[in-house]
Image (cartoon, rainbow, N blue to C red):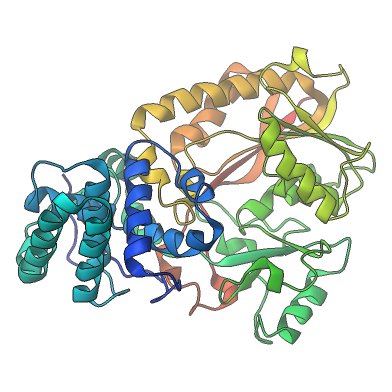
Length: 475
């Protein structure tokens, strides 16, 4: 499919999954992991699968599932070589899970096999002999089996073939680095609520709590900037922890003193609030279209006294937006309203008063957040991108008339594909008189230089893949 230098990413990358992320029996979690892998392969979101599990089983199942999905390309190729005719979905999920984990270093190999066979005996006993034979054969022939996959890009990079081809086309000099970055565990990044105290003050509290070292330095926007000159808008000040912790351990989290938000996502609110080099005035009307889960909505309200309408088509997702605003002490109220409606149909919800600024965080492939959601790569199809591009165009066209002359619209997606980023903006500018592009970050890529965010200095931690375009409407 493509030529790779000898130094490219290994077929089975080692991730930062803890050796023992759970206290439940391994056979039990392998059984749950097999369910999750089978569900993802049938098109179900891993988030939904995990939400349906008993709370005690979620952390361990998530840890195993993440590790497996990051190596699913390798596991699929191995299973195909060992069992050309796929068994029933759950048994196949179990085989894929065990093969993927056997390529890592989370568990002793023979213990892993024993526990996988035990899981099969408890749920699908007639298939336990097959599972035992296949996994034992892998242990005996591992070197030869993996060597036979050397020219298989899907097995090597653990992404679908179409995804790899598109990155090669969009980013000919960076596609391997981006695929490698997707295999890493992302850092935990925080945003201090500046209405409760400065970022520097919150860093000091983290140091006092033992969650941050005294020499940790702030992140510059250049660390999440990949393709254009760095932009460091006022209000952009992410805090990266050296290791992830439960939010209950964060000082003042329940009181709204901080939020968890990736560094790249933290650019949105500062870019819009300070668009054109001048801050939005108090009381400015701002629309946050497609607002759920609410991180950007909250950041806007933290930075300025705005009149914000947070819109989302899913009423259930707006529940989380309201909960976030309540925790941060920002609403919902007359200055922070949530509305359940389709942003592409303004006639159903717009009151006729133009907005000073619009944030359009458009639905997209989520290809930029694969580190945090490793199932995304296996759920998406290339045809999805065309459909999403039509949705993105429709949203831009529907919302632009709602913007005041002289106002600004910030378009963003958590995607690394150009069809969801610069190509959409180029097409919009061509068909829209009075729309002007202002300096903005453009495409942001996770970068391979920071493969170990835990070992790397906090000031060099990478953010998710994103795209930003800031547009102004000619007065």
